[in-house]
Image (cartoon, rainbow, N blue to C red; front, top):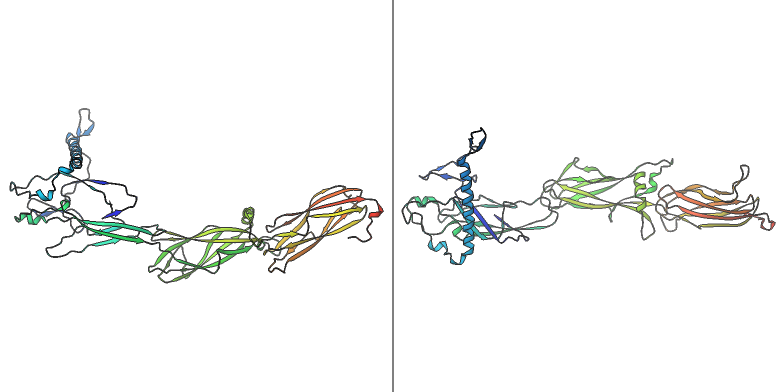
Length: 472
Protein backbone atom coordinates (compact mmCIF):
# COMPACT_ATOMS: atom_id res chain seq x y z
CA UNK A 1 0.00 0.00 0.00
CA UNK A 2 1.46 3.35 -1.06
CA UNK A 3 0.44 6.98 -0.51
CA UNK A 4 1.12 9.84 -2.90
CA UNK A 5 2.01 13.23 -1.47
CA UNK A 6 2.09 16.42 -3.57
CA UNK A 7 5.24 17.67 -1.81
CA UNK A 8 7.15 14.38 -2.23
CA UNK A 9 10.43 15.10 -4.08
CA UNK A 10 12.08 11.68 -3.97
CA UNK A 11 13.16 10.22 -7.31
CA UNK A 12 14.26 6.62 -6.65
CA UNK A 13 13.81 3.94 -3.98
CA UNK A 14 16.60 1.60 -2.92
CA UNK A 15 15.24 -1.54 -1.25
CA UNK A 16 17.47 -4.10 0.45
CA UNK A 17 15.91 -7.31 1.70
CA UNK A 18 17.09 -10.76 2.72
CA UNK A 19 15.75 -14.11 1.56
CA UNK A 20 12.73 -14.30 -0.67
CA UNK A 21 11.09 -10.98 -1.60
CA UNK A 22 7.59 -12.38 -1.04
CA UNK A 23 7.72 -15.32 1.38
CA UNK A 24 4.48 -17.17 2.14
CA UNK A 25 2.57 -15.92 5.16
CA UNK A 26 -0.14 -17.32 7.35
CA UNK A 27 -3.49 -15.69 8.16
CA UNK A 28 -1.86 -13.59 10.89
CA UNK A 29 0.71 -12.15 8.50
CA UNK A 30 3.68 -14.08 9.92
CA UNK A 31 6.21 -15.65 7.57
CA UNK A 32 5.79 -19.42 7.17
CA UNK A 33 9.09 -21.30 6.93
CA UNK A 34 9.44 -24.79 5.43
CA UNK A 35 12.14 -27.44 5.73
CA UNK A 36 13.91 -29.18 2.86
CA UNK A 37 11.04 -31.64 2.48
CA UNK A 38 8.63 -28.77 2.00
CA UNK A 39 6.80 -29.26 5.27
CA UNK A 40 5.72 -25.95 6.83
CA UNK A 41 7.12 -25.29 10.28
CA UNK A 42 6.88 -22.55 12.87
CA UNK A 43 9.29 -19.64 12.57
CA UNK A 44 12.30 -19.94 14.79
CA UNK A 45 12.04 -17.93 17.99
CA UNK A 46 15.25 -16.14 18.87
CA UNK A 47 15.53 -15.87 22.66
CA UNK A 48 16.32 -12.47 24.10
CA UNK A 49 19.72 -13.08 25.68
CA UNK A 50 22.89 -11.13 26.11
CA UNK A 51 25.36 -11.34 23.19
CA UNK A 52 28.03 -14.05 23.61
CA UNK A 53 31.12 -12.82 25.36
CA UNK A 54 34.62 -14.11 25.80
CA UNK A 55 36.59 -13.90 29.03
CA UNK A 56 39.94 -12.14 28.75
CA UNK A 57 42.99 -12.76 30.80
CA UNK A 58 42.25 -9.88 33.18
CA UNK A 59 38.73 -11.13 33.80
CA UNK A 60 36.85 -8.48 31.73
CA UNK A 61 34.12 -9.44 29.29
CA UNK A 62 34.40 -8.56 25.62
CA UNK A 63 32.35 -9.52 22.56
CA UNK A 64 33.14 -12.92 21.17
CA UNK A 65 35.18 -13.13 17.98
CA UNK A 66 32.36 -14.94 16.19
CA UNK A 67 29.94 -12.11 16.89
CA UNK A 68 32.33 -9.49 15.55
CA UNK A 69 32.90 -11.57 12.40
CA UNK A 70 29.13 -11.89 11.81
CA UNK A 71 28.69 -8.16 12.18
CA UNK A 72 31.55 -7.49 9.73
CA UNK A 73 30.10 -9.98 7.26
CA UNK A 74 26.65 -8.36 7.46
CA UNK A 75 28.06 -4.90 6.82
CA UNK A 76 30.11 -6.27 3.93
CA UNK A 77 27.06 -7.88 2.35
CA UNK A 78 25.05 -4.69 2.65
CA UNK A 79 27.89 -2.71 1.10
CA UNK A 80 28.14 -5.19 -1.78
CA UNK A 81 24.39 -5.05 -2.33
CA UNK A 82 24.41 -1.26 -2.52
CA UNK A 83 27.38 -1.34 -4.87
CA UNK A 84 25.58 -3.84 -7.10
CA UNK A 85 22.53 -1.61 -7.20
CA UNK A 86 24.66 1.34 -8.21
CA UNK A 87 26.26 -0.76 -10.95
CA UNK A 88 22.82 -1.51 -12.28
CA UNK A 89 22.06 2.20 -12.46
CA UNK A 90 25.41 2.97 -14.09
CA UNK A 91 25.19 0.20 -16.72
CA UNK A 92 21.44 0.04 -17.12
CA UNK A 93 21.76 0.26 -20.90
CA UNK A 94 23.66 -3.05 -21.16
CA UNK A 95 21.44 -5.04 -18.79
CA UNK A 96 19.30 -7.69 -20.42
CA UNK A 97 15.80 -8.01 -18.94
CA UNK A 98 15.52 -11.05 -16.69
CA UNK A 99 12.26 -12.01 -18.29
CA UNK A 100 14.19 -13.01 -21.44
CA UNK A 101 17.02 -14.99 -19.83
CA UNK A 102 15.33 -16.34 -16.71
CA UNK A 103 15.67 -20.06 -16.15
CA UNK A 104 14.62 -22.40 -13.43
CA UNK A 105 17.20 -22.94 -10.69
CA UNK A 106 16.98 -26.68 -11.37
CA UNK A 107 17.37 -26.43 -15.18
CA UNK A 108 21.17 -26.37 -15.40
CA UNK A 109 22.34 -28.85 -12.74
CA UNK A 110 19.16 -30.51 -11.55
CA UNK A 111 19.92 -29.34 -8.05
CA UNK A 112 18.68 -26.24 -6.19
CA UNK A 113 21.00 -23.31 -6.67
CA UNK A 114 22.37 -21.36 -3.70
CA UNK A 115 19.98 -18.70 -2.42
CA UNK A 116 21.27 -15.14 -2.12
CA UNK A 117 21.33 -13.76 1.40
CA UNK A 118 20.68 -10.13 0.48
CA UNK A 119 19.09 -8.55 -2.55
CA UNK A 120 19.08 -4.90 -3.59
CA UNK A 121 16.48 -3.32 -5.84
CA UNK A 122 16.50 0.18 -7.29
CA UNK A 123 13.21 1.48 -8.67
CA UNK A 124 11.55 4.75 -9.60
CA UNK A 125 9.83 6.43 -6.66
CA UNK A 126 6.10 6.78 -7.12
CA UNK A 127 4.79 6.83 -3.56
CA UNK A 128 5.53 6.23 0.10
CA UNK A 129 4.73 2.83 1.53
CA UNK A 130 2.41 3.11 4.50
CA UNK A 131 -0.54 1.44 6.17
CA UNK A 132 -2.42 4.68 6.92
CA UNK A 133 -4.86 6.14 6.04
CA UNK A 134 -5.33 3.20 3.63
CA UNK A 135 -4.85 -0.35 4.84
CA UNK A 136 -4.96 -3.66 2.94
CA UNK A 137 -6.39 -6.87 4.44
CA UNK A 138 -4.97 -9.46 3.94
CA UNK A 139 -1.65 -8.49 2.44
CA UNK A 140 -1.21 -11.86 0.76
CA UNK A 141 -3.86 -13.98 -0.97
CA UNK A 142 -3.77 -17.25 -2.89
CA UNK A 143 -5.59 -17.18 -6.21
CA UNK A 144 -6.41 -20.70 -7.47
CA UNK A 145 -6.20 -21.56 -11.14
CA UNK A 146 -9.17 -20.07 -13.00
CA UNK A 147 -10.46 -18.83 -9.65
CA UNK A 148 -10.55 -15.60 -7.70
CA UNK A 149 -9.73 -14.20 -4.27
CA UNK A 150 -10.96 -11.23 -2.28
CA UNK A 151 -9.11 -8.61 -0.31
CA UNK A 152 -10.30 -5.50 1.50
CA UNK A 153 -9.03 -1.92 1.45
CA UNK A 154 -9.93 0.12 4.52
CA UNK A 155 -9.73 3.89 4.86
CA UNK A 156 -9.41 5.53 8.28
CA UNK A 157 -10.05 9.25 8.50
CA UNK A 158 -7.06 10.99 10.12
CA UNK A 159 -7.76 12.81 13.35
CA UNK A 160 -7.80 16.58 13.72
CA UNK A 161 -9.17 17.43 10.23
CA UNK A 162 -10.58 20.96 10.17
CA UNK A 163 -10.79 21.40 6.38
CA UNK A 164 -11.32 19.09 3.37
CA UNK A 165 -8.32 16.86 2.62
CA UNK A 166 -7.73 14.65 -0.44
CA UNK A 167 -5.84 11.37 -0.05
CA UNK A 168 -4.41 9.51 -3.06
CA UNK A 169 -2.82 6.07 -2.93
CA UNK A 170 -2.35 2.88 -4.88
CA UNK A 171 -1.89 -0.84 -4.34
CA UNK A 172 0.79 -2.90 -6.09
CA UNK A 173 0.16 -6.62 -6.42
CA UNK A 174 3.16 -8.88 -7.12
CA UNK A 175 2.44 -12.44 -8.29
CA UNK A 176 4.63 -15.42 -7.42
CA UNK A 177 4.44 -19.08 -8.46
CA UNK A 178 3.58 -21.49 -5.65
CA UNK A 179 6.56 -23.53 -4.43
CA UNK A 180 4.55 -26.74 -4.68
CA UNK A 181 4.78 -26.61 -8.48
CA UNK A 182 8.57 -26.79 -8.37
CA UNK A 183 8.56 -29.80 -6.07
CA UNK A 184 6.41 -31.91 -8.41
CA UNK A 185 8.83 -31.44 -11.32
CA UNK A 186 7.26 -28.63 -13.34
CA UNK A 187 9.67 -26.70 -15.54
CA UNK A 188 8.61 -23.08 -14.93
CA UNK A 189 10.15 -20.48 -17.16
CA UNK A 190 8.00 -17.36 -16.49
CA UNK A 191 9.14 -14.44 -14.32
CA UNK A 192 7.62 -13.81 -10.91
CA UNK A 193 7.80 -11.26 -8.10
CA UNK A 194 9.71 -8.11 -8.98
CA UNK A 195 10.52 -9.48 -12.44
CA UNK A 196 6.87 -9.31 -13.40
CA UNK A 197 4.92 -6.12 -13.98
CA UNK A 198 2.76 -5.67 -10.84
CA UNK A 199 -0.98 -5.25 -10.83
CA UNK A 200 -1.84 -1.68 -9.83
CA UNK A 201 -5.03 -0.40 -8.24
CA UNK A 202 -5.39 3.35 -7.61
CA UNK A 203 -7.47 4.46 -4.64
CA UNK A 204 -8.67 7.93 -3.62
CA UNK A 205 -10.54 9.33 -0.64
CA UNK A 206 -11.74 12.75 0.43
CA UNK A 207 -11.95 13.52 4.12
CA UNK A 208 -14.41 16.21 5.13
CA UNK A 209 -14.60 17.79 8.59
CA UNK A 210 -17.70 16.56 10.38
CA UNK A 211 -19.10 19.56 12.22
CA UNK A 212 -22.37 20.27 13.94
CA UNK A 213 -24.72 22.96 12.73
CA UNK A 214 -25.02 25.75 15.32
CA UNK A 215 -28.14 27.92 15.54
CA UNK A 216 -28.63 30.97 17.77
CA UNK A 217 -31.60 33.10 18.71
CA UNK A 218 -29.72 36.27 17.84
CA UNK A 219 -29.43 37.65 14.32
CA UNK A 220 -25.94 39.09 14.75
CA UNK A 221 -22.77 37.79 16.36
CA UNK A 222 -23.49 39.67 19.63
CA UNK A 223 -24.80 36.71 21.56
CA UNK A 224 -24.82 38.58 24.90
CA UNK A 225 -25.92 42.18 25.50
CA UNK A 226 -25.78 43.78 28.93
CA UNK A 227 -25.66 47.33 30.28
CA UNK A 228 -22.86 48.36 32.59
CA UNK A 229 -25.38 50.13 34.81
CA UNK A 230 -26.94 46.74 35.65
CA UNK A 231 -24.06 46.27 38.09
CA UNK A 232 -25.45 48.99 40.38
CA UNK A 233 -28.30 47.82 42.57
CA UNK A 234 -31.11 50.09 43.90
CA UNK A 235 -29.34 50.31 47.27
CA UNK A 236 -26.21 51.64 45.56
CA UNK A 237 -24.07 48.53 45.97
CA UNK A 238 -22.48 46.58 43.12
CA UNK A 239 -23.54 43.05 42.24
CA UNK A 240 -22.33 40.72 39.49
CA UNK A 241 -24.69 40.39 36.53
CA UNK A 242 -25.34 37.04 34.80
CA UNK A 243 -26.89 36.95 31.33
CA UNK A 244 -27.64 33.79 29.38
CA UNK A 245 -28.11 32.79 25.77
CA UNK A 246 -29.39 29.64 24.10
CA UNK A 247 -27.67 27.67 21.35
CA UNK A 248 -29.03 24.80 19.30
CA UNK A 249 -26.65 22.10 18.05
CA UNK A 250 -28.03 20.11 15.14
CA UNK A 251 -26.34 16.95 13.82
CA UNK A 252 -26.95 16.95 10.08
CA UNK A 253 -24.40 14.19 9.41
CA UNK A 254 -25.08 10.49 8.98
CA UNK A 255 -23.03 9.43 11.99
CA UNK A 256 -23.28 9.85 15.74
CA UNK A 257 -21.10 12.53 17.28
CA UNK A 258 -19.37 12.57 20.66
CA UNK A 259 -17.93 15.87 21.80
CA UNK A 260 -17.08 18.22 24.65
CA UNK A 261 -17.93 21.90 25.06
CA UNK A 262 -15.19 24.27 26.19
CA UNK A 263 -14.98 28.02 26.69
CA UNK A 264 -13.08 30.50 28.85
CA UNK A 265 -14.11 32.92 31.61
CA UNK A 266 -16.15 35.08 31.88
CA UNK A 267 -18.14 32.74 29.62
CA UNK A 268 -19.24 29.29 30.72
CA UNK A 269 -21.61 26.49 29.82
CA UNK A 270 -24.50 26.59 32.28
CA UNK A 271 -26.52 23.57 31.23
CA UNK A 272 -27.19 21.12 28.45
CA UNK A 273 -30.38 19.31 27.63
CA UNK A 274 -31.25 16.51 27.52
CA UNK A 275 -27.75 15.34 28.51
CA UNK A 276 -25.50 16.69 31.23
CA UNK A 277 -21.86 15.95 31.78
CA UNK A 278 -18.44 16.64 30.38
CA UNK A 279 -18.85 14.46 27.27
CA UNK A 280 -21.99 14.73 25.19
CA UNK A 281 -23.39 12.50 22.47
CA UNK A 282 -25.65 13.47 19.61
CA UNK A 283 -27.15 10.97 17.23
CA UNK A 284 -27.67 11.58 13.54
CA UNK A 285 -30.44 14.14 12.79
CA UNK A 286 -30.77 14.86 16.53
CA UNK A 287 -30.90 18.27 18.21
CA UNK A 288 -29.24 19.40 21.44
CA UNK A 289 -30.05 22.69 23.19
CA UNK A 290 -27.42 24.26 25.41
CA UNK A 291 -27.29 27.39 27.55
CA UNK A 292 -24.27 29.67 27.77
CA UNK A 293 -23.67 32.29 30.43
CA UNK A 294 -21.73 35.55 30.63
CA UNK A 295 -20.89 37.16 33.97
CA UNK A 296 -20.19 40.89 34.16
CA UNK A 297 -18.22 42.05 37.19
CA UNK A 298 -16.89 45.40 38.32
CA UNK A 299 -13.31 44.18 37.83
CA UNK A 300 -14.08 43.06 34.27
CA UNK A 301 -15.68 46.42 33.46
CA UNK A 302 -12.71 48.38 34.81
CA UNK A 303 -10.25 46.15 32.96
CA UNK A 304 -11.78 46.66 29.51
CA UNK A 305 -13.07 50.20 29.91
CA UNK A 306 -10.07 51.65 28.09
CA UNK A 307 -10.89 49.58 24.98
CA UNK A 308 -14.42 50.99 24.62
CA UNK A 309 -15.50 51.94 21.11
CA UNK A 310 -18.28 54.01 19.57
CA UNK A 311 -20.78 52.62 17.09
CA UNK A 312 -22.07 54.51 14.09
CA UNK A 313 -25.19 55.51 16.04
CA UNK A 314 -23.08 57.06 18.81
CA UNK A 315 -23.51 54.27 21.35
CA UNK A 316 -20.39 53.51 23.40
CA UNK A 317 -19.77 49.87 24.18
CA UNK A 318 -17.21 47.23 25.04
CA UNK A 319 -16.88 44.17 22.80
CA UNK A 320 -15.65 40.91 24.32
CA UNK A 321 -15.11 38.27 21.61
CA UNK A 322 -14.82 34.59 22.50
CA UNK A 323 -15.17 31.09 21.03
CA UNK A 324 -17.19 28.07 22.00
CA UNK A 325 -14.93 25.11 21.23
CA UNK A 326 -16.65 21.87 20.25
CA UNK A 327 -13.95 19.20 20.72
CA UNK A 328 -14.87 15.96 18.95
CA UNK A 329 -13.80 12.89 20.88
CA UNK A 330 -13.42 10.50 17.93
CA UNK A 331 -11.45 12.74 15.55
CA UNK A 332 -9.78 15.24 17.94
CA UNK A 333 -11.06 17.99 15.61
CA UNK A 334 -12.04 21.32 17.15
CA UNK A 335 -14.96 23.36 15.83
CA UNK A 336 -14.81 27.00 16.87
CA UNK A 337 -18.09 28.87 17.19
CA UNK A 338 -17.30 32.61 17.50
CA UNK A 339 -19.57 34.91 19.45
CA UNK A 340 -19.38 38.28 21.15
CA UNK A 341 -20.62 39.83 24.35
CA UNK A 342 -21.24 43.58 24.24
CA UNK A 343 -21.45 45.82 27.29
CA UNK A 344 -23.38 49.03 26.65
CA UNK A 345 -21.99 52.13 28.39
CA UNK A 346 -23.85 55.32 29.34
CA UNK A 347 -22.73 58.54 27.69
CA UNK A 348 -23.32 61.96 29.23
CA UNK A 349 -23.56 65.20 27.27
CA UNK A 350 -23.46 68.70 28.80
CA UNK A 351 -25.27 71.78 27.56
CA UNK A 352 -22.05 73.80 27.85
CA UNK A 353 -18.49 73.40 28.98
CA UNK A 354 -18.14 77.01 30.23
CA UNK A 355 -20.21 78.93 32.78
CA UNK A 356 -19.35 82.65 32.78
CA UNK A 357 -21.08 84.50 35.61
CA UNK A 358 -19.58 87.86 34.66
CA UNK A 359 -19.24 90.47 37.43
CA UNK A 360 -21.01 89.71 40.69
CA UNK A 361 -21.44 92.37 43.42
CA UNK A 362 -19.80 91.38 46.68
CA UNK A 363 -22.31 89.77 49.03
CA UNK A 364 -24.64 88.60 46.24
CA UNK A 365 -25.09 85.17 44.61
CA UNK A 366 -25.74 84.64 40.91
CA UNK A 367 -27.11 81.39 39.46
CA UNK A 368 -26.78 79.64 36.08
CA UNK A 369 -28.17 76.31 34.88
CA UNK A 370 -26.24 73.32 33.59
CA UNK A 371 -28.18 70.65 31.65
CA UNK A 372 -27.06 66.98 31.55
CA UNK A 373 -28.37 64.59 28.86
CA UNK A 374 -28.10 60.81 28.48
CA UNK A 375 -28.44 59.64 24.86
CA UNK A 376 -27.27 56.06 25.43
CA UNK A 377 -29.10 52.77 26.00
CA UNK A 378 -27.63 52.39 29.49
CA UNK A 379 -28.68 54.06 32.70
CA UNK A 380 -26.34 56.71 34.10
CA UNK A 381 -25.45 57.29 37.75
CA UNK A 382 -23.74 60.70 37.79
CA UNK A 383 -22.23 62.96 40.44
CA UNK A 384 -20.94 66.56 40.35
CA UNK A 385 -17.91 67.75 42.32
CA UNK A 386 -15.46 70.67 42.46
CA UNK A 387 -12.24 69.67 40.75
CA UNK A 388 -10.37 73.00 41.18
CA UNK A 389 -11.13 76.39 42.79
CA UNK A 390 -8.97 79.50 42.53
CA UNK A 391 -9.64 82.95 44.02
CA UNK A 392 -10.85 84.35 47.32
CA UNK A 393 -11.80 81.65 49.80
CA UNK A 394 -14.84 81.98 52.01
CA UNK A 395 -14.60 81.98 55.78
CA UNK A 396 -16.20 79.41 57.99
CA UNK A 397 -19.15 81.71 58.71
CA UNK A 398 -19.80 82.78 55.12
CA UNK A 399 -21.61 81.00 52.34
CA UNK A 400 -19.52 78.92 49.92
CA UNK A 401 -18.21 80.66 46.85
CA UNK A 402 -19.43 77.90 44.51
CA UNK A 403 -22.53 75.82 45.05
CA UNK A 404 -24.67 73.49 42.91
CA UNK A 405 -27.83 71.53 43.36
CA UNK A 406 -28.40 68.61 42.92
CA UNK A 407 -24.93 67.15 43.21
CA UNK A 408 -25.85 63.63 42.00
CA UNK A 409 -28.63 61.73 40.29
CA UNK A 410 -29.73 59.12 37.79
CA UNK A 411 -30.55 59.43 34.11
CA UNK A 412 -32.69 56.78 32.48
CA UNK A 413 -31.60 55.26 29.15
CA UNK A 414 -32.72 56.77 25.89
CA UNK A 415 -34.90 54.09 24.32
CA UNK A 416 -36.23 56.29 21.50
CA UNK A 417 -35.02 59.42 19.77
CA UNK A 418 -37.58 61.59 21.55
CA UNK A 419 -37.12 60.16 25.03
CA UNK A 420 -33.89 61.86 25.98
CA UNK A 421 -33.32 61.87 29.74
CA UNK A 422 -32.39 65.31 31.07
CA UNK A 423 -31.16 66.57 34.46
CA UNK A 424 -30.96 70.31 35.33
CA UNK A 425 -28.25 71.41 37.78
CA UNK A 426 -28.34 74.94 39.26
CA UNK A 427 -24.85 76.35 39.82
CA UNK A 428 -24.38 79.46 42.00
CA UNK A 429 -21.41 81.79 42.65
CA UNK A 430 -21.26 84.03 45.76
CA UNK A 431 -18.69 86.85 45.79
CA UNK A 432 -17.31 87.58 49.24
CA UNK A 433 -14.55 89.99 48.19
CA UNK A 434 -13.36 91.75 45.11
CA UNK A 435 -11.29 89.59 42.81
CA UNK A 436 -11.32 86.88 40.15
CA UNK A 437 -12.88 83.48 40.79
CA UNK A 438 -12.08 80.42 38.71
CA UNK A 439 -13.24 76.85 39.24
CA UNK A 440 -13.57 73.58 37.38
CA UNK A 441 -16.45 71.20 37.95
CA UNK A 442 -16.23 67.48 37.12
CA UNK A 443 -19.18 65.27 36.16
CA UNK A 444 -18.40 61.61 36.79
CA UNK A 445 -20.36 58.40 36.48
CA UNK A 446 -20.27 54.99 38.16
CA UNK A 447 -21.10 52.89 35.10
CA UNK A 448 -18.20 53.73 32.80
CA UNK A 449 -19.20 57.24 31.71
CA UNK A 450 -16.51 59.53 30.36
CA UNK A 451 -15.71 62.35 32.78
CA UNK A 452 -17.02 65.77 31.66
CA UNK A 453 -15.66 69.10 32.94
CA UNK A 454 -17.19 72.56 33.21
CA UNK A 455 -15.11 75.71 33.63
CA UNK A 456 -16.61 78.41 35.93
CA UNK A 457 -15.52 82.04 35.72
CA UNK A 458 -16.67 85.04 37.88
CA UNK A 459 -15.44 88.40 39.17
CA UNK A 460 -16.32 90.07 42.50
CA UNK A 461 -16.87 93.84 42.68
CA UNK A 462 -18.30 96.49 45.11
CA UNK A 463 -19.72 98.62 42.31
CA UNK A 464 -23.46 99.09 42.82
CA UNK A 465 -23.98 99.08 39.07
CA UNK A 466 -23.51 95.31 39.12
CA UNK A 467 -26.15 94.79 41.76
CA UNK A 468 -28.70 92.34 40.46
CA UNK A 469 -32.35 93.13 41.02
CA UNK A 470 -33.21 89.52 40.17
CA UNK A 471 -30.70 86.70 40.45
CA UNK A 472 -30.35 84.98 37.10
